[in-house]
Image (cartoon, rainbow, N blue to C red):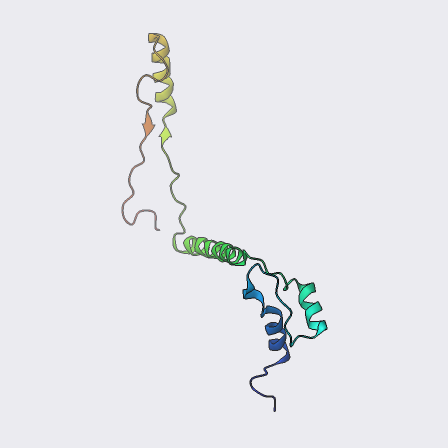
Amino acid sequence: APRPQEGTASTMAQTALLANSAAGAQPAQPDATQSSGEQALLQTAGASTPDPNIRTVVDQEASAETDASTSLLDKLIFWRTPDPAGTIVDPTAEQQRLQQNAALGQPVTTGATPTIKRKKKALLEGIF
């Protein structure tokens, strides 16, 4: 029976490849127990010079996945499209205001811009 502390061949390979990943930006020193083939494999795989910003990269990838899953969850729970942000200018009233300002010789910025007010929805309105 295999010894429990040895593990499988794939576990040993992962351990050999990732053993020096916590070394930071410093190039990993060859381990005395590694053969020249293992050292060459680590060198070829890029494990001898780990990326010092790996935590930032992993955090960015994890947050991107979280954002994607959150948006899917929001789409499932809040299936209605939200009202557009901002205010809507009433074009007819705005045209009249601009014409009155032009007729009186006033600047176009005189007076309040007329907007269309959205009515507030009732608590259960639009669900069905």
